[in-house]
Image (cartoon, rainbow, N blue to C red):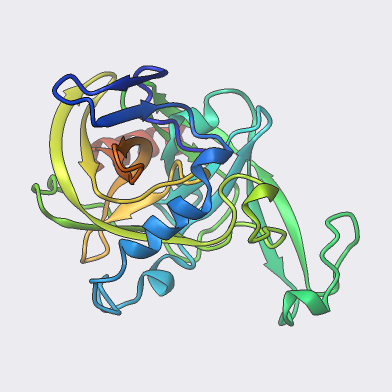
Length: 280
């Protein structure tokens, strides 16, 4: 789940107007609802059909995003950054105990879901789901970023951009369904189903915690279950990890969202991963 900006847990009027209110709450089911899904679809209206390095958003992200869950109940996504099992995700998804990568293994082509057994307690002839335990390599609460490792070879992984994005740059986020048992009814859980969203960078802020990092505010539309989702530029380079969401409710009850994503320097990532490999 996305932690809403991880600032304050309050609902307050903006200081200069009585017409707009901002909410900064931990994401629960209310942040995976038809309105949020409508806003995500709306964010795609004016973009070309293949906006990321000549690919559609669905095709670009389809084999590049892992679905992860923690025993504490958090769920989110993770971006593979190497072929030998290193991933980048949001720290709040993996900081509260053991976590797992839920991997769908296809045994043979899957027919439409209504025609097959979807009871998770009954083995299927078409697929099985393996939960691979993860290991936290590095995490930082201020940037809300974490590097994690699974005993898994990712079929594809992200190339990390070396420079900060400028204000106004186009950005994209997306994922596949995560797990086969996902239902389209949002009452069945948080973060269900595939998602795609497009937007632009609104602000860029450099800060320092354990390591220097950059935090962006953007017009990307997030909802529950998207924490840890990779954010890329129009060349497909990894620009950051989705960590938070600010939701604004206007006087006419119209929703507006601003998604936050963060990134540390790729040289720092490479150093952390290399040091971990040497210790294993």
